[in-house]
Length: 274
Image 1 (tube, one colour):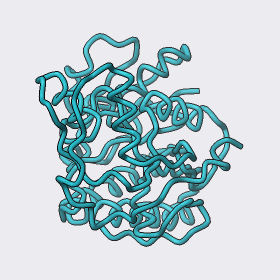
Image 2 (cartoon, rainbow, N blue to C red):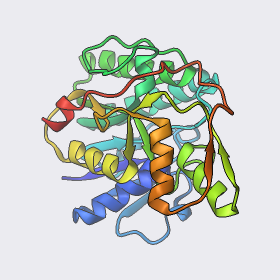
Image 3 (cartoon, rainbow, N blue to C red):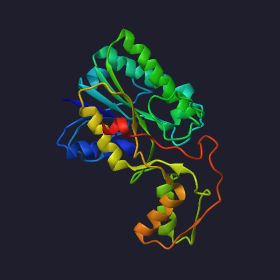
């Protein structure tokens, strides 16, 4: 099976490339700036979804059997209109060109923000109700791809990813921000009240799930990529501090709770495990 991975230099993409190597799979990595990949045992193709002519995208990607599509710009600014005004249209044009070129299976990264303010546990049968620009754009892209495959048949697995943490994450995210504060020797770590329940998964585990979905021969529809276990952000931060042996203390209540998230939600992972 020939697998192509878009967004290969991103947070998730780098871990997916490592997981493919661990599985003994040589893939084609599509990246806007391939020099950032360094030395990897995969084929590398320069690809810029916004700048490239979509025509011939499938051929340039090496005619893969499946595309694991992780590319997306503008993160982590979830409310930026860039997602709906620029990112989604460019993504659709490029994915449509891949399908018209001959690609028959897609595994596309979605987001738990497609569920909006619904409280957990969240399962794939729920209606999507996004309230931020990123979730809206992702959900709109999924619907457009569903319409497209009525005329241009292809398999689609929509991997609705919940919260991840690990090496290579954006510096403003919870784990790297805490680690940086501890390494600086800060006495306290400013955070929210920490009582919100979330579904966090190590990025290496998420990468393994995504590779397994890509290597599967089936069309799975929407699949939550999550732990299935709710945990408070407070407990998560305190657990990281204990595990690392840091002395930093959480300063709870410094930041407000995000308005685009409910206080308690997590993913139902029963379909993923099946």
